[in-house]
Length: 227
Ligand code: ADP
Ligand code: MG
Image (cartoon, rainbow, N blue to C red; front, side, top):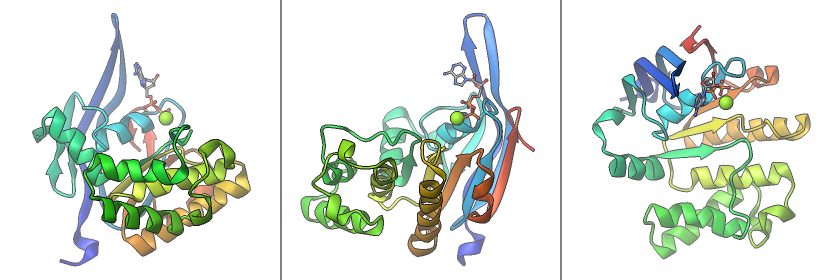
């Protein structure tokens, strides 16, 4: 099968409602989407439009109330909680707005931990950690702590960690939200290169107009639906 025929992510009538006491917030109201493998895709929409909720449902961090999510053919609803956690650790890379690095661990250890949690053996863990840090240009910084790095460098560590387990899918939630515009551009270029070189599918939320020139496809979320 050729790459262009492979569907990375597919949802059908995905719904997610948050309940706070008597109040209901319909964050997703029937999301239908299909992403081809190997693409760099932006998910745009105003604050509160459901972007984070959708990403969390696609990556198995949250469960929808209705509808289906398939990631490379895997229907997530058929996985129990332990299986879903394992699937997520091994098959999906997450990149967060505030990086989410562990402050007491070195750059190297932050990346290696993702591999340890997925059960990678020592030798493979070491080689893969070095490879990922090299890929994001941080080989020389591996013994430093996150707080010794700039925001852009910290996000590169976050990206190296997301790549560690060779995921087919990377989900990035406002990954440039805390970076200045020049640094944000560097990160978008790095994403572009990773999609080309590593063949991953990358879905990124953003409300920055400048992402348009870097991505293959743009999806708009409005009031919990794809516009
Ligand atoms: P976005 O990422 O596009 O800003 P979110 O997915 O965070 O949107 O939020 C969608 C809607 O769901 C918003 O109205 C938000 O207030 C609500 N929401 C998000 N998370 C929760 C939660 N844990 N509990 C209750 N409401 C939530
Ligand atoms: Mg959000």
